[in-house]
Length: 106
Image (cartoon, rainbow, N blue to C red; front, side, top):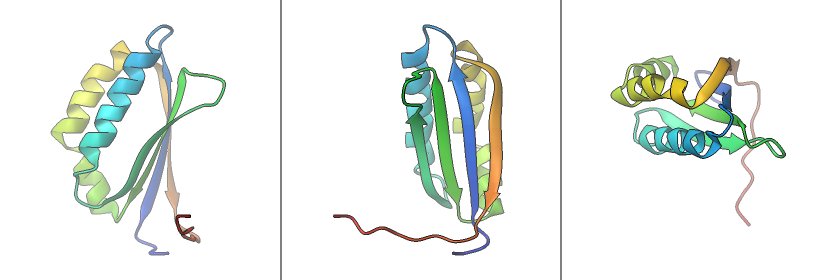
C-alpha cells in the first residue's frame, strides 16, 4: 500500500423527508469528483435499515490531491447546498493506510 494515500470517511444524515434530495446531492458530488486529479475512489453508501444516513468513502493519492479537491467549485457548491438537505454535524475521519488487498472481479 502506498503510504502517501489518504482515506476519508464522512457520515452525514439527511433531513427528515429529504432523503432522495440528499442522495441526489451526494451522487452528484461523487460524479463530479470522479474527474478530480488524484482521486482513487469516491463512493456514497446508504446505511442498511436507515435511509437517512449516508457514508462517503474517499481514497486520495496524496494530501495535495485531497486539498485541491476541497477547494474545487464542486465542493463549494456542495457545501452551499448541503444545509438544505443534511442535518447535524458531519462525522468526518481521516485514515492512513496500513495494508490493502485487491479482490479480482468474478
